[in-house]
Image 1 (cartoon, rainbow, N blue to C red):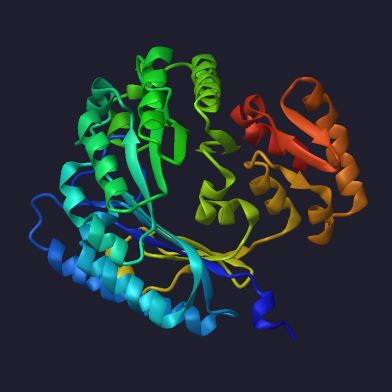
Image 2: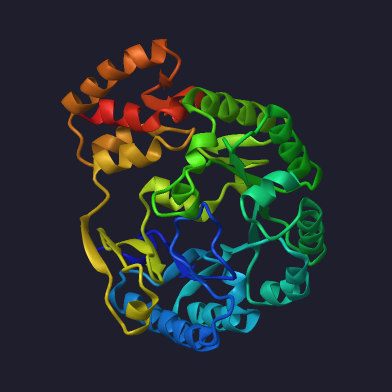
Length: 381
């Protein structure tokens, strides 16, 4: 019989679907609250629903241990510190939260947030992920962001003064008219603030967003230029002391790698709660519909099949610069013939500089990360 202490602790993701207004590039599920008279009611009912779903998952779980919690969105701080407190209190009441748990909250870096930081600390939040996106005000305006670079810097400094020692900033690459100089300015901005973690995402214009409707894609860099900008920021971050550990993520030290997000790439189990949130729980994938009303009404997550097989593990682990060991694939059911085939297919990619094969391990290079989907598909099929 499986002992409780032998079952790895869970992660918990809370999707908070409220924003002041939606950014024109954003494809995540959220609801713009500006001008709505029913926002407070929905937030109250949403908070009660999150607490309800936490209990439901616990009743079905093989463990009550938790070592990461992540409030994403949307804009979690719009929920107010009181409601964040209510949710974290419920998590601590229901689950055994480890002493060194990583508890992250996403936030937009505006000055008004500074007044609430101490309250979030008391709610257990010990890591902040700020949606900076750029340290260039013209790029922030293009992206529809409501903060300036100066406001973002003041917010980070206020968070540090409030005692936050683990802060991440998001950056975007491949923006319209973006240059290496602008990217370097953003990297220097983050470095001079001494943040511990940086995420750097390539802008993708998603169907249905205002950027898509307005054909912003037409003025975005082409694929070759996107690759140049991506490799440039990878090198610039390295030179400023940030180690790449995942396609889009960089840390000043291994202890500052985003532990919750690494769960996804390790195929570890986690609970996702909120409209559009996904879970990998008791060996199965599942997700809530992208609909706040359905979530509040108690609609159960939709089953999305089994997870955790060796093929899925390979696909996810190759997002990490550490790559994957073939022993792990064997333990998950891969035959030696599968591994031999993977090695054979990987060898010409190694010669081309897209990956490394060494000591029974395979990992992608920054050049390989750029075409990771194609490489993974080639290795698997």
